[in-house]
Amino acid sequence: MTLPNPIYSRLTRLEPGRVLLHSALAGLLVGLGGVVLTYALKLVSSALENLGAVSPELPSRGGVLFAFEGPLKLAPLVILPLLFLVLALLRQLDPRKTALEGVISGHHAEQAPLERTRGSLGRLLAGTLTLGAGVPLGRDGPLAGLGSWLGGVSARLGRLEPNEARVVRLSGVAAGLGLALHAPLAAAVFAVEVLYRRFEFELEALLPAVLASIFAYGVYGSFEGFSPLFTLELPVSIPALALPLFLLLGVFSAALGSLFAEVLEGVRRGWTALESLPGRLVSGRPVSSKPVFGRLGTLKLQVWLAPVVGLLLAILIITVPQVQGEGLGWLQLGANGLLNPAELWGLGLFRLLALLLLAGIGVPGGVLIPTLVLGGTLGAMLGGLQTLWLPDLGIGMAAWTVLGACTLLSGLAKTPLSSVLLGLAWGGESLLPGLIIGCISAYALSSERTLFPAQVETRAQSSAHLERVPTVPQEAGLDSAESNTPSLESTESSDSGELLYRVPAPVHLLGQAPQDALFAPHATLVALSRATGVWLPHPNLRLEQGDVLVLVATPEGYAALLERLIPPPSENIPVNTVQDEPTRAVPVAEG
Image 1 (spheres, one colour):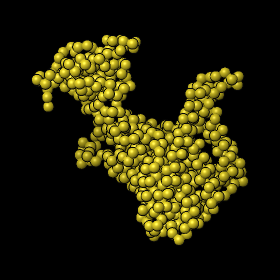
Image 2 (cartoon, rainbow, N blue to C red):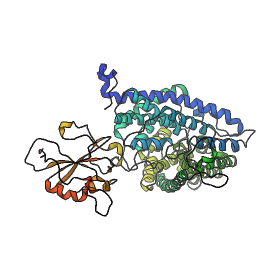
Image 3 (cartoon, one colour):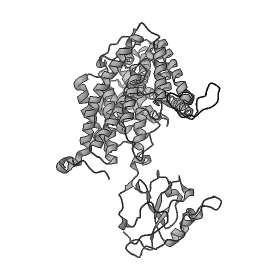
Image 4 (cartoon, rainbow, N blue to C red):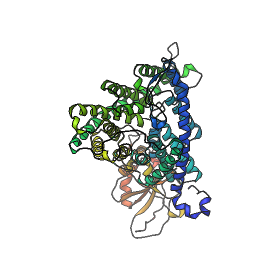
């Protein structure tokens, strides 16, 4: 058990709300960190902007909605391959360690991973260089990583319990996403919703996430301003005749999102499979797959392919300038009706290909903003068709852009509620009917594939919600987990006829769910003891080496259970891993 910070012993009024207090502190830190990260991105971008094309940027971020070409248009052919090579050598190309994917998998882990300062700063630096070089990813990745790290810092300052620290880290992530989207409330709901594929939420983290997002955005806005992310001309209301069109938008978004997620998963698997393949020497002889900087003969095949990916991306950026950068400036131009259909198709198709490649190999950067750009482009395309065929509806390109962005996000990330809230933050209440229809239909019709494979179906399948038993004192009848022989401790006698048994997990049942493997009449598994603590039975729990089973059974029930505990003779496993009879019979008191 973690000892609380001594400050709470003197200021007792703070102790009940210490999770909220440290979430607010995380928000303040993320707000300041977001300002520093924003200036760093501007510094890197300004250093490289004269070497190639400059994409339009949002006025809300101090940019201009014009595209320029520098004198050295071919500079990306050198910059991007070199950048990708450095990222590969520093082990920063991993689809399992991208910001939001790492946050989700870490949250669901039985023991949340420790956020180390060196690793966190390394990922932030890699993300800053990547985005500053014009790679078409989003700043939501670095900001979410910053929030997770600073949330962990805040939790360690308060010496919070593991479950409390998990909530504070998630609040920090929400704060970072709020800065990236200029929508703190939507980001807070997104952070607690994106953890699950089904319509479930981390409700205990919702209020801390809202508080952290508000504090972070307040600090950030004091330096960068509180302007809306987009400047849009939106209709006062949506006509009822247009509502079926939003259902059609949901169908298209679900189809595009499902296809995108399927292909993305294939790219990720292919790139991860290369991790086990070594590079080869000039002679062709295989070498060790362990990557060691400076020893070219022992580099992974991934390291050799990374510059090739960078070269392909550079060629794509030079050929199609709309691919460069986050793409929000191009999306603003599309919402203003300043892009023709060919430019919209180029923006959508080629950014889709770039995102598949970059997210598939795990380039540092966010995938949330690129997904919104793709969805907004899809909405603008459908808006152009509606203007051509049904010009009297009066919806407008801006409304279609916002609706498309939020609808695709809902189906691809499995986040319908936060997608609706994001649309309200960007477009106002007049878009609410279209947002509800589009986001819910896209979510309902989309496949099981998702933008974030680390998501789990429901809370019941998350290791973070395995019901844990408090530490049991020795007099309660449980020995330490180091015991390797079944034993029974003395307890108060009763007439129930049931006995308490402690049995090491049989080797032949490792990896199975104890509730299924140990089913027998008149025998009940009440707890499982392992090095990390004592756990209640749960469908997601699996037997591991060193586990000790705590059973309550009648003598007849234990005898029947022995048939499952003793390995079959065909398996080459010592039979004495389970004791046939308990050393002492201990009745269990009823009630």
